[in-house]
Image (cartoon, rainbow, N blue to C red):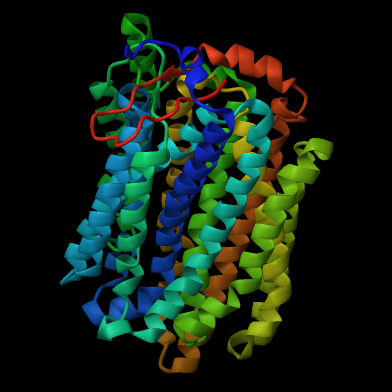
Length: 526
C-alpha cells in the first residue's frame, strides 16, 4: 500500500460505525495523556514542602523542579509538533508517552534534588513530543462541525487536570504509601502511561503532513537557545542576586528570536520546511489566540505555585487540607469549560472569553480582600466564594481559546500549530514561575530579617500572596484587552460542516499500519 494514497480512497472497506467508535476511543486515549501531563504540572506544587524536607532542597531547587519541567516542555514543543507532521503523529505520541513514563519512574526514585531536577527536565522534554500530537490528532480526526464539541471536552479535561492535581498530590503525599512520602505523585504515571501506550498502538490512526517535510535543525537550535536565554536568568536571577549576565541574556534573547524569524523566512523560501510556519500568524484568530495563550500561561504559572506556598508554608496547612480547599475551584472550572463551548460561545463569541478574564480577575480581588481581612486565621470555607468565581472565569477561557486558535488553521500544519499553542502556553507558565522570584519570594526576602516567629513568617507569606495576586490581576487586564483581536465568533460555528469536510479530504495523508500492528487500522473517514 502506498503511503501517498489519500485517505479518502481508503475508507470504503471500513464500516462507518467501526471507524467512528475507534476515533472516539482514540480521543479518550490522547485526552488521558493530556490529563496526565497537566496533572503532573500541578501535582508537584502540593508536594513541594514534603520534597523540600525529604531532599533538603533549596528554594532555587524547588523552583527548578517546577520551572525546569515547564522550560524543557516549552523548548521542545515546537520541535515535537513538527516531528509529528514529518514522521507521523501517532508515532511521536507513542514515543513521547513511553519517554514520559520512564522519566516519571526516574522522578519517583530520585535520590537527591539534582537527580529530581534532571528527571523533571527529561520528563518535560518527552512530554514535548507527546502533547503536541494530542491537538493535532484531534484536528485531523474530527471534521470542523464536530471540533467545537471535542474542544469543549478537551477544555473540561484541561481545567480538571490543572486543578485536580493538587488534590491527587495531597492524597498521595498524605497517605505516604509504602513509606514513599511524595514519590507516588510520579509513580502513579506508570500504569497510566503503559495503558496509553498499549491502547494507543491499537486505536490511534496515523497521519502526517501531505507533503514531504524535513526537520529544521538550525531552527530547533535557535528557538531553544532563545527560550533558555529568556527563562533561565529569570528563574535563577533572585537566587544569584540578579547578575549582569542575566540581564544581558534576557535582552539578547529578543535578538535571537528576531534572527530565528528571519531564518524561518529564508527556510520557507529555500525548501518549504521551516520549523515554524510563519504563514500561520497571518491568520488573525491564530495570532491573537497565541498572544492570549502566552499571557494566560503567566497567570497559571504565578497563581498555582504561590497559592500552594501560601496555604502550606504560610498558613501551615497539611497537603490534604490544601488539596481539598481546591475542590470547588476544580468543579467550577470543569463545569464552566463544558458549558462555554457548547452553549455560550456559539451565541456570544469572544465575549465569553472576555467575561472569563473579567470574572477571574474579580475572584482574585475577592481573594485578596479575604486574605488581608482574615490573615493567617482564614478558613477553607471562606475561600470557596473567590475560588468558585475564579474557576468559572478560568473555565470560560480554557476551552473556547483552543477552539478559536485552531479554527482557521490548515490541517497540514496542525502539528506545527499545536506545538506553537502549547509552546506559548508553557513559555508563559515558565515566565510566570520565573516571576514568582520577584513577586513572591522577593517580597518574603525583603522582610526575612524580621521573621522571628511562626506568626511573623505566616504574616509575611500572606502579604507576599496578596502582592502576587495583584500581579495576576494586572495580567488578566492585559488579557482582556488582547482578546479584542480575537474573531467575534469562531469560524467553525457558522461554516457548513459538509463543505469543510470535502475541502479537508485531500489534505490528510493516511499511513498504512506498521508490521507490529496486529490488525489493520482504519483510516480517517472523510
